[in-house]
Image (cartoon, rainbow, N blue to C red):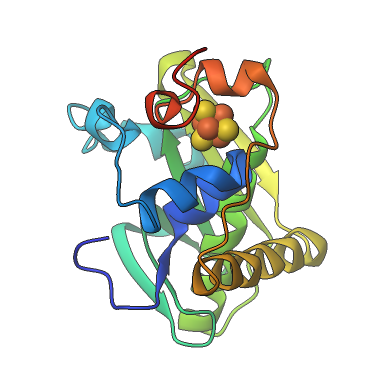
Length: 195
Ligand code: SF4
């Protein structure tokens, strides 16, 4: 976790934990990283602003912030949001760009938890209430709205607390997910090499 203050998580950790808790154990406790990360795969297209173009008129956006660095001392978490849109109605809308595919046209659970975590950070920083976010799936050219109600933000808060607790105790959560998830996991070589 280079560049991240001791004892802090990143929003990417929340995304990984939502996919499989063992990934966070592997990266933080065993200090192993996958060979090709989503960030590396996205490197070539990371700066393309066209992804938010459809939202500009739809949401009446007056300001587009990109690569927004956010931090919460309360939750001990940092993150860098791809885009943060401010509408003429004063609404802040986080947008995440994903290289991964949708889950059959729908936003994946780990991506929802990532957006909910960004919502918590945006709320703390801008003293506002985030009501929705968007995930843009690059390979499918699909922009999907994610309602960010209190329930999902509470789940994200609980997940952040769970991760801190797991890391403080250095507890291995074990293998809790289906083989199908493992087969498309970048950490499989460290975790389930026989698959
Ligand atoms: S291989 Fe499976 S259990 Fe291991 S980290 Fe990946 S998804 Fe989790």
